[in-house]
Length: 249
Ligand code: IPE
Ligand code: IPE
Ligand code: MG
Image (tube, rainbow, N blue to C red):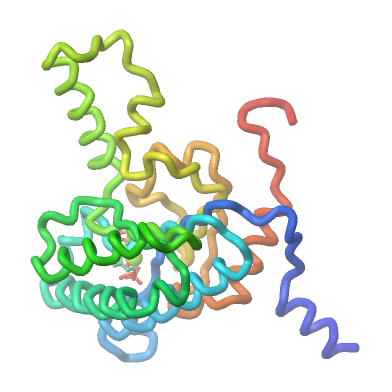
């Protein structure tokens, strides 16, 4: 019996009829995970990239339609160049694998953020995965890379201002929907659930517009240790929430 109850605790009950359509994750805590083990921070990023692959498999199996991950922020360039290049190296490795496997896994891969400062080889791989995504139909994985919520909103405002300057649009006619259509997330429903592992309780410039009514689940578990059990327990927590969107439910 004791074993049974332990097992029950290890595998949270999930209601298959209330799976979040869109799950977003701030993949945080890689550096601390490595430091706790006396390893270089880059070892944490490497472990974190494995966790990302497994999380994508788990969420796809559950029937989640979109999985958006924060992989590198507009502020992460402040880190030592060796750390930045290690992260880009892991991305390169992941993209090579994705080009090979994404048809078989039936996932669609998109990149949100300004990819223009990335190396030509990374950009070519990104383009390749986008092309493959046109012929796959499964879960959509949005990788936020050189992404910042403020940058995204600034770009959208600039695009609308340009239309006004060109005489194609009047400022008074601008709607929220027009702005939304100029975000990287255009056409994708807002996240239902945001998970932030790694112990911090902040948004760190992630999806500032899209998270308006998202349910937040914070966890002290560091991202490389965030396995299926933690994903399921975050979804179970989401399923206990009552979403009101400003109404009275
Ligand atoms: C998240 O882990 C990965 C990136 C920001 C690229 P961190 O590297 O921020 O790990 P901590 O927060 O320092 O532990
Ligand atoms: C957020 O984590 C960015 C990513 C996970 C890519 P950070 O580690 O950069 O956030 P802060 O600095 O703790 O706010
Ligand atoms: Mg961090």
